[in-house]
Amino acid sequence: MKDIKLYPHNQETYDKIQALWKTENKVAAVQATGTGKSYLILKCVYNTPEENKVILAPSNYILEQIEKEAGEQLPNTKLLTYSKLSYMSDAEIKELNIGYIFLDEFHRCGAEQWGDGVQRLLNAFPDAKVLGTSATHIRFLDNARNMGEELFNGNIVNNLSLAEAIVKKILPMPVYVSALYTFDDEVNNLKTKVENSKNDEESKKEMLKEIEIMKHKLNKSKGIPNILKKHLSKNYNGKFIIFCKDKIHLDEMKETVVEWFKQSKVTKEVNVYSVYSNYEYGNAEVEAFIENKNPKSVKLLFSIEMFNEGIHIEDVTGVILLRPTVSPIIYYQQIGRAMQAGKSATPVIFDLVNNFDNIGAKNFVEDLEKEVKLENDKLGKDDDQDDGEEKKYIDISEFMIFDETLEAMDLFTNIEDKLIDNWDVMYGRLEQYIEEYGNTKILYNQDKLPGWIQNQRMRYRMNKLSEDKINKLNRLNFVWEPSDIWNEMYDYLIEYKKNLIIV
Image 1 (spheres, helix red, strand yellow):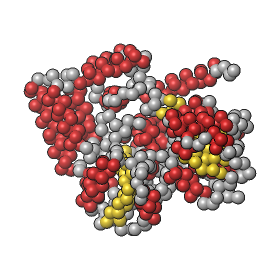
Image 2: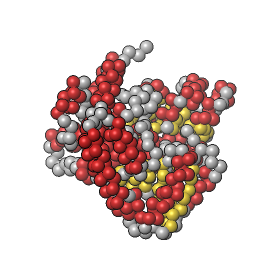
Image 3: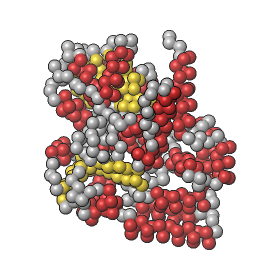
Image 4: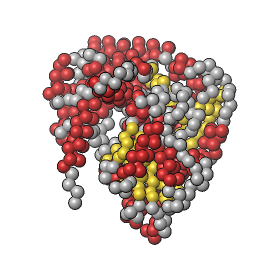
């Protein structure tokens, strides 16, 4: 029987799973993309060879990868997609006769049809041991539903975020290059805001002039080919997964991205592949991408949704983000495609849609800063024990993120703040939201408000927010440090667990 070797962080999680299964049937492990969650499932599968088992996942791609990682037949194990399960009758489900259920990417079980199939499966086998794995247990765009509570009664043995995995050196820190290929759109949007504002004509004229100067400066020195050239070596032969919005967007960007690489002169040859739902040649394209070892070419795999979760290709050297997202789940799953436990090479992330409303670099930096603080606080407590060992504190400068648009974004934010009606409009929206929900700890179905809140925090830290605006926000009990929210919600959870009455 195959022996699955686990990295230390996964061995610790596996031991916790086995210990909790002695008293609870349902257990979940929440770990960042790239940390080897599928190996936890495989270890459990091979540890129970005689038991009937089922592994469920969102797609056949993920199931095929689990089979590939196993390298041999999985003992007494059925592999099903959530979609296929949802169409099975109760009689067909009963025929599975299983003792173990594995729910990969279990946050997806919140979808109505898929969730119904999973619930029927769980009801059919109430005594089965259940393990759920995911990079997150929260469905952020579904009123922040907590699938860890709904499916596993809060029995989460590990909650390892991407930022924590990087700070603890489980995953490699990427070179993160933030830029804007949509810069012209951003410029035009800002110009329209200026022209439609209630500012006087003289100040409008001055602001439009500043925008034009910045546009000329960026077009001249910081075009995407120059950025590629700056951050990639000559004769580069890496592999990139490129995330697009939809089929039209993918078709539009193929030619553009290839031209970027050619103009950058980091490579003489570019090989292009595509994968998306209902594309009959998708599997063949992915296989060709995986098998391509040409040392003289850059390989680009354009994707729509297909690689957001669960699928890792070992020799991928980076990702290129071309689609905006307001979902932290999708954002971290996408950048996580470039990172994998045990890899020593430095991955590269080109975030080319890091605009004001998009989840992006600033969120990543905030999460890293929070984890660095927690790690350093832990080291400080260890120092109090005075065990004679010198502790090495973590310096945030070790985690450098290259941002090619900081200057432009700073100018844009300054101009937005100068617009008489814009800041007050957003402040009014924040005031109205707090009036309705009581706080901004979880932002339900908001469009531009989360990005605006993050900009206020960033400008506050940089001492670029006026005293008048600080005072206005303080009157709303504005939370300046996101980590304060995390700590408060954690305290609520502890109190909730203490007062929980089991009936």
